[in-house]
Length: 424
Image (cartoon, rainbow, N blue to C red; front, side, top):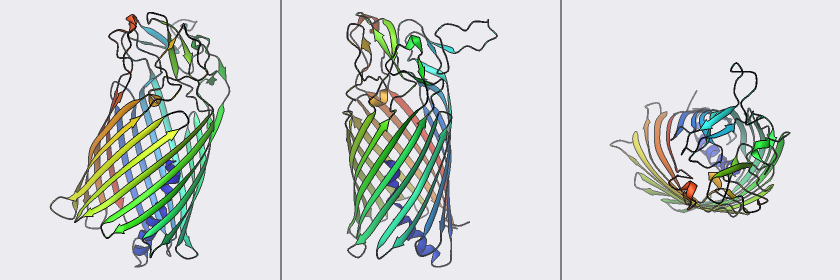
């Protein structure tokens, strides 16, 4: 969905770049950035450098290249509940919940979570490299077409995608209608093999590699309402099919008093269809620019979400230095098969997951961006944001779970430094 959404911005970028290139200046544009993301509680830390390069060939023909590298580390929640006693789990490459034979000289495939702590694999490491390529140009009269491709590689995942979008201007370029399509094919190579979905965790039954595919589309309407107001309406749809289960997530199975009796691997449906609507506005209030948007999404897993996002950009004393506060509010409902845990007295459902990303929760982001334009019209900026997520279900009345935070909220800090250079 994000890939197809980004396509419709390409024609506008092409128009802006061609205006500069027509004067014989700045045929190249380089953007670079470094993002630092950290979750609290010893969870994930991400360092992500990114480079974006655009080449203008004139006549609104634009080539765009993007490269991203991610380095992630830290603790990754495995889906099990905290307990009042220590809990032992196997790493994804582990084949048994018993210590390895052969003495201390052999590397253990196990890790233990202390009482009261959220079970997390402390050995999580991942690196991702991704590249995007797109070409945009006009055709016929008042039309733009953009075609592109995407490749992404991790140690346990490979993704390839192709996309295309068409945009047409009407009403002396005050109205633009666009259509974007994206097709993606993924190969999932879980460490140690994909577990048998819904099986007993103690058995550690494994299967081979898996795959999934995603198709998505976007219909967009952009309207210049008046000299200070620009509005956009996007309708999106995407369908995923294949292996949609997280191979590293499990659930706790509890007895009548809340003591853990076993664990099972999660199991998600093999199909997911999502629909979304987005309404965004940019309003110029003198030299100040206000951006306000609302997004609504729903899917056949019963996950519904609302997002409100607002930014206000204004200059600080001169037209070179600016400040941009940012506020975002998000709320979603739980998936129909989401369970915080399973009960031994009940039959296991066909589909089940305790992944916090599928739970009901609310979240808020607050941040600010500070930017400075240099004399050569290049720009450097720094963005600092804080995010807090609060799940709806965090406790249970079962005796063995009393006093435990079963679904801890999440707090993160994001720092991004970016540099834009209009020429090379």
